[in-house]
Length: 174
Ligand SMILES: Cc1cc2nc3c(=O)[nH]c(=O)nc-3n(C[C@H](O)[C@H](O)[C@H](O)COP(=O)(O)O)c2cc1C
Image: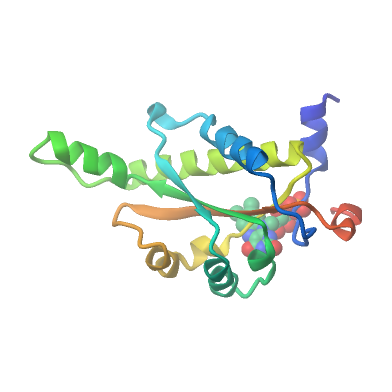
């Protein structure tokens, strides 16, 4: 088994972190790896929000079904399916622009999720654990408001990252 496949096989969600920040260079690599993911029509139909404000992390830990480890995660990224940036650009060049449909939205969701998983894999390769948080979607109205997202942008995924605490390393994944 090569190293990449080994890491894919051994990955598990990490919910308890060491009190250790993620180095800026490693964070930059994780975000760059996300940006290198394939995207539909090379349109990069997503945006990434890097949540650094501790108060905002605390809020998210409550709005995402009271999961306190979100507030403790050294890095929190929200992947937004973002058709708005293209819609705004089209509006600059065309008199009439159709509103995005379900297909456009689903492509944007795909782009955002594929980028998120690239970030997860890159983090794992550097010993940094992660966990997706589905409640960012389940409470998407709340979160659109929290991040002041425009009409054609919705959260697609949230992933929290951090160095795994020893007990997480030892946790047996089913
Ligand atoms: C879309 C998505 C949403 C998830 N949401 C949560 C969540 O809100 N809280 C949590 O603790 N884990 C969450 N998880 C992690 C899953 O529970 C986990 O991936 C699954 O149980 C398999 O375990 P493993 O990742 O350790 O292999 C989520 C995973 C995905 C893919």
